[in-house]
Image 1 (cartoon, rainbow, N blue to C red):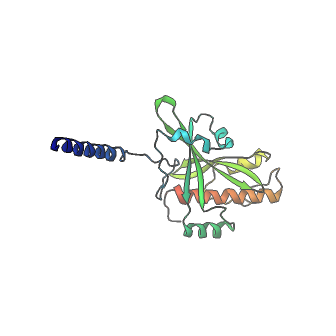
Image 2: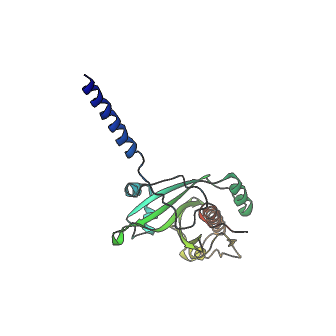
Image 3: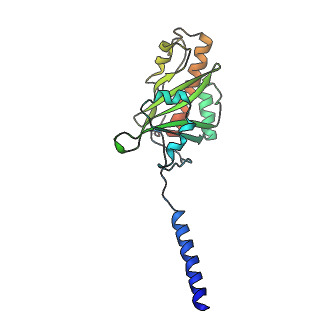
Length: 205
């Protein structure tokens, strides 16, 4: 009887040890290709990240034709940052839960990030803002939007959080109704400042 009892105890202990071992698997965190100055609350295991592909809309996938998978990133914008951004732009932040999409490629046998993008809305239309890393801060590589002049949208390329997007001075309407141009410029500016706040390098200004 004692032998049976001891065997049962050992079996339970071994089972608990195995369970504990399985519950401490190391996960990795995906972040946009910029320095992350805040705590990332979205941890994605590199083995399961491809399952997140359905979270990326078709417009984002089209911006990264070489990507094999996408991960949707959620970050809460700090209250003090919201106040600063809205004061600087004169516009309201559409959602305190900011979303970005990280694109990954498995070329060469290793998984690497190839870009980051956001989806914004302005004047009833959706736009994809594609970001790249510039001096450890997010800079706009391209803005895409259907039914809007490409000449107008290309003016945002290369701009970052330190740039102004005032229509008529920094950005020309160029084939776009002035009201729509202002709405787009405002939305892009808000998103650029938000990306800098969440992922950019710290600076003194």
